[in-house]
Image (cartoon, rainbow, N blue to C red):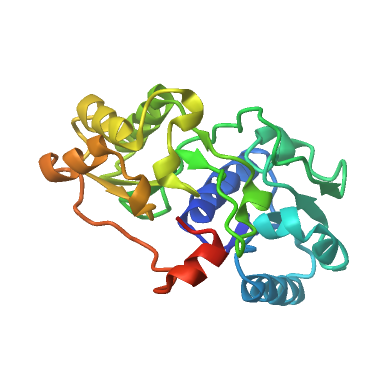
Length: 261
């Protein structure tokens, strides 16, 4: 069997899953079941563990590798599962070397707060689709009381503008017509780079890749939308006028206790 991927959670996970699939296949890892977990709710973890057990029963000869936020923050729970052969943390999962020497250590979990840049995955359009999800930001600097994601993803890090533009150009050359920029806290893009904003990145992509038909944004934090992004939404016909905004609560006291802005 080829590399089978079970991906849970957000669009960022979906994009990373496709990049990992390509890396594992390039390393010759046939017979692999790659489970990219989510930890945003207890139910997400329960579903992932249920899927792991089902996949192992259906393919007893396959090697089950667990990664993602669940693997990062609930390592012991996944390590206790006899179906799991390897556990790979979020800092290692996009490193091609991980898939080349798989099995050297059963559990490989690094500190997600390490300030070193993440490995930049090869652009990976979703299979048999003309749309691609492109991660340009990872991690989160906020500490909302209900959210475990910063402890699974670390602090906010951004892909440099030139690298993001190059990835979009490569995707278009492969036949991608629509690119969706994604991240954990997308509107935090660029703060760690000391200059560019999400609006600036959008402008650069549209200017430097004229053959891209459509550019879209995944979820954003509306209070962090920068003026250049708002102007681009009004002026750029190839930037889709669609925003996904999360409604957390309608009560100011609840929002305060959640440490939402």
